[in-house]
Amino acid sequence: MEEVKSIRVLIVEDEPVIAEDIAEHLMDVGYEIEAIAYSKEDALNALAVSSPDIVLLDIHLEGNMDGIEIAEYLHTKCDIPFIFLTSYANRSIIDEVKQSQPMGYVVKPFNKGDLFSSIEIALYNYAQLFKPRNFNLESINKRINSPLTAKEFEILVDLYEGNTNKQMVDKHFVSINTIKTHIQRIYQKMETNSRSSTIAKIRSLLE
Image (tube, rainbow, N blue to C red):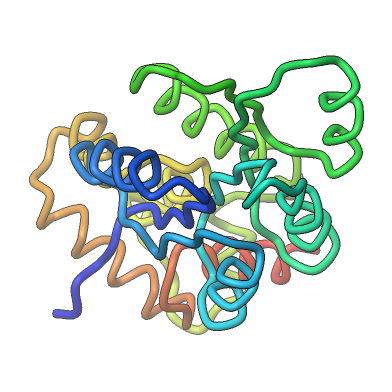
């Protein structure tokens, strides 16, 4: 069976030490690092070939506010939530970045707990913001060829709300392999291959 990845994160941070530190902490708790981008060009190139589930985005890249340009691209061209990372917390910057509708704003230096909580809340709020009103097992099964089981739909909801594989293990009291098997079957039945494509498929089916 193909490896089922957990939540995939793109890190956009021009300081390599900070970027690697964030990546290490995220991998320790079960996140997958889609890529690390150190500049606006790196970030746009990464987004051209991949579809992360969430982006951690430094506002200031190489001395410029390129993070805001990337945020505008994510907001207008992609269906991907993002969280701003910054060493600055002044009101004028906050007012400017709000226009791109980030799902969070974390001021550096931050601790691991704050970062993890921000990601969880961002994924959940983003899912709720665009959650179709008729998101239920019956509605989904009417629109796909191979119907989901009740348990698979529970896992589908977890995927939609941004829960990690580890969180699903704890919630459903099953092994990580059982969760991965459920996810793989969901992908097969939904004809998708990732969390982000599955979420997009749900929205397109139920719009």
